[in-house]
Image (cartoon, rainbow, N blue to C red):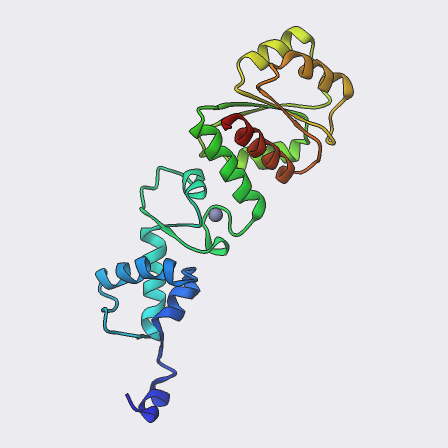
Length: 219
Ligand SMILES: [Zn+2]
């Protein structure tokens, strides 16, 4: 194609690589499987470099409706599994689960690693109602089951022991709304192998501590 033809058409076409980049396929590794998919669907063919801009919306809709766009295996596992769309890797900012949020990505990894290790019952002692809600909402499709004990709710040793016995991991979340007596009673009740102390507030700190605990138990 000559230079003049190229510029005459420039308002109506765009590079296929730019289109793929917009959807979230940010590098060659992510673009080549995506490119094959849009070729198979008939939107382009292997010889083409450009695509008509009026096809752009259609391609975006096709990819988004037919595939789970995720940045990692953990984010794919954290999504609602009832939607059986096959997964395609995109950059984190376009991920349907984490949307580029470091916190959500860490939580997805935590949930995935816990279930891979068959640690499904997680007891969290402390934290605010708000962080408990965020945790449960983010991980509602994961296999793990999170039970939260409010840090201001007095619990006797017997009840704490029962709760800890049925848990696979006991997170004691210090630096949050956690009374010393509550922390003490659960610290005594929990088996040392199950206990994960978290020294900082925030869900990032919780996920980090659990991920470190898992890495240590695997060694
Ligand atoms: Zn993600």
